[in-house]
Image (cartoon, rainbow, N blue to C red):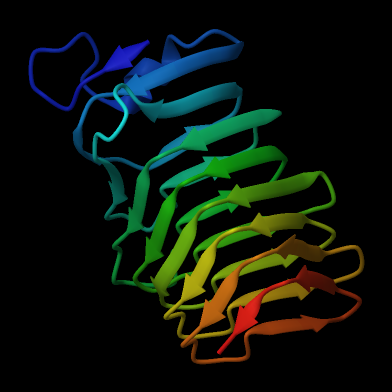
Length: 202
């Protein structure tokens, strides 16, 4: 499926295109441009730019996350995700069930966390991503959720860089840079766990 931000296309919004996506396994190709949307992803899908090198920005200006994920296997590649709501702590990416795979994704949030995952059935993997200039935590997992972060940058968070809270919650990964955050680089409590190797903390 191919969607452009230009007027006159088959789909007016990404949300409209998602309604026509198959139950599992579809690929949604986004044309270069800015998309002002808050997306709810409940099925397995791949979302990426239509052409290599194109700049695609998905921005939420509401109190809803840019991506709210509860699908089995969701893949998001080569996008910029921006949560710009100023009226409260709205997170940019939220996972409440299933697996989200981020590859070369830039994440910002004016007031909330960059990535938030909750529940033992929720997992996130982030490869070559950046989480920056967020109003709360860079990556925040609770209640048994997990995140694996590799070759990524987490910087400029007003709170801690990465946080794991609750039994079974864990943050793993390697070769990351965590710097210039308002809180600690990494925080674990209430049974949470973090294992980050070959990382740089400033």
